[in-house]
Structure formats: structure tokens, C-alpha cells
Image 1 (tube, rainbow, N blue to C red):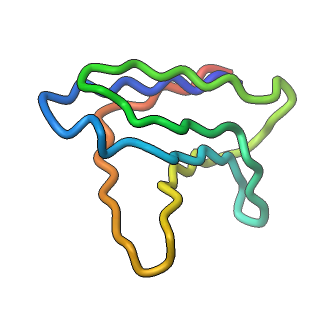
Image 2 (tube, rainbow, N blue to C red):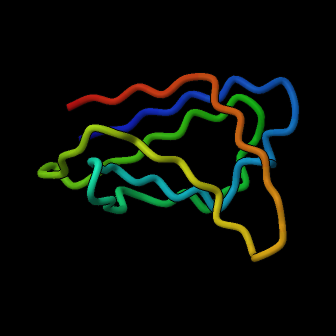
Length: 81
């Protein structure tokens, strides 16, 4: 499974960091990849998952310390199986 994320940001690219990419079903979630970042405006990020990974959902999560808030704004995600 290949997850291809395109970020076409005019500003605030640095907000994309510590991004955990999971795939899952209704019952389980498995880690697909991790992007340390930070990104820069216009970055294109490609994450190669395990070729045997299966799931119905792609979950993007910024890992933050307790009590901190981060914002994740996604323009487009392409998933190739």
C-alpha cells in the first residue's frame, strides 16, 4: 500500500510534523509510517506501507505532548493499493 499525500500550502508548512500514519478497520489500527518533519510549503510526502497492510481507513495523527494542541489541515490524500 502506498499513501501519497500532497500538501500545497501557501504558508504554515512547518505545522506538519510528527505525523503518524495508520491504517485500520473498525476493530484494529496498524502503524503504516511516520513523518518527522517539519514540512515546508509545497512539500509532497510519500509513505510506503507494508505491502500486505490491509484496512478500510487511513488515520493521520499529529503526535503532541499532553495538553498541547496542533492543527492538521489536509488538502489531498491518494491511496494506491
